[in-house]
Image (cartoon, rainbow, N blue to C red; front, side, top):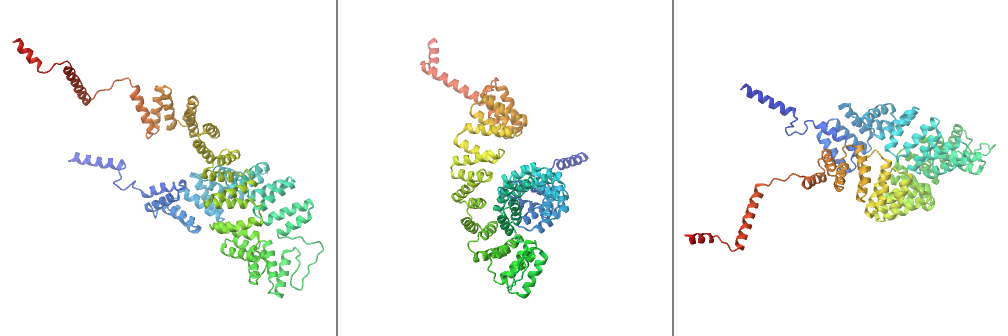
Length: 632
């Protein structure tokens, strides 16, 4: 009995120690949920994301992973405070949750809580080098003037965010602060390659040229910045200062006017007119008091409130400017500029519904007001109201046809709505102004490819690679087109270039080997496969391909060695198993054993053959007894 009990206890221990789950999964659903949460960032399909989140919530609704998913969902709908609360709950449940820490750091940074943000971002980066974490950390460090570390984090972010102009702009600003204008200029150029309309990059380039006293190049950069944002007063004031230095008084005065600081003629005295209007002195406080005094005398004057609003706006007093503009609107102001300025300030505070009303009022007063059409189009586009956005962008282009940035916006809206013909026309219009723009060429190429016009697609993809050689999406798209067109020489050149650009990636050498093998250039194919295996000794597909190639060239022993290695690296490769079986069937010198069933069939076959032979010679089974009787 004692022995039986001992055996029973040992059996229980064995079951427990071998991880038997008794039908309840892994035994720790929250651990499973935590593992699943780590895959969310890599999932691109929205439906799959939702399904994975639902699975996590079902496994661990009240644990760290459950709160993490809740935070993601709240963040998705714009409830940042709720998301922050859920991320905090995640970290209360599980202190070591890098994704929760990093995401929380991003939200803290958005709210300007830089001390808290830097702590959480550092925790996130300790285990998860997310480029967004690097970017946010770099911005915080740059604000604190810790430029060497800021440069490091911006550089890390740039590796994974090659099309984010803000990263390059931040990097450039850090280089300027550390006295490296040449490097800064390089980064600004990269920012403009990513986004040709980057206002910050154009202004940054202009500031570097101004420091070199190259006024013409600085002015050229500022003009490009103005095209992207004609409402930016700093750009107008900077241009005014340059024109003033160049002696172009008329242009300078016009730019000062657009910048909200009109220059008054010397010796002009402050006069209070009978209407209550006045000439401003340039002293902000005195001018404000002067206008307020005039308003007390004439409270129904919309123009006085307009001037008050303009003055507050030029001094950065947005709240006071909004109040003054609203009062002017209440008094039925007929100035289209008042409503535009009011809309801009409201939009700045994310009061988009009110901003739309203001822009529409500006258009009622002046239907051909280009700036109001543009502002209204941008708001509609940001809210997904694409048809209205197209209408206002089109009106703007009628008034200002030389606006490539708007053509690009229109092209992307049309492409998003599957109106490919209109999209292509808009891209062509944009590319006339910026023929080397990487994004536009890539996007129009995809449209031509979808349309089946592969020649045009190749033309634009080639322009992309001329500017951005390491664009793997473009390289893969070109390979697909070349394969379809059976342009094997072009594929070889492209894949060879990819392998040279990324020599440490075994997959690139493997793909190059495949095309060499297809062209029966076995020597180069073998070299490519061997390079892939040098990088990754267990690269199963290269081992399999090399084994296959050795079989083709009669090197059976080497083929068997490579195929056995491929099978060990990936037992699921079907071709490897088939090739190994072929080697055994065709080249194994040992004779096979004959099964019993085959022996039986062989005997029957021999007996049948003997019977047929006897019949053919006329000998029957009755002949032998007859011979015997004769002897008797």
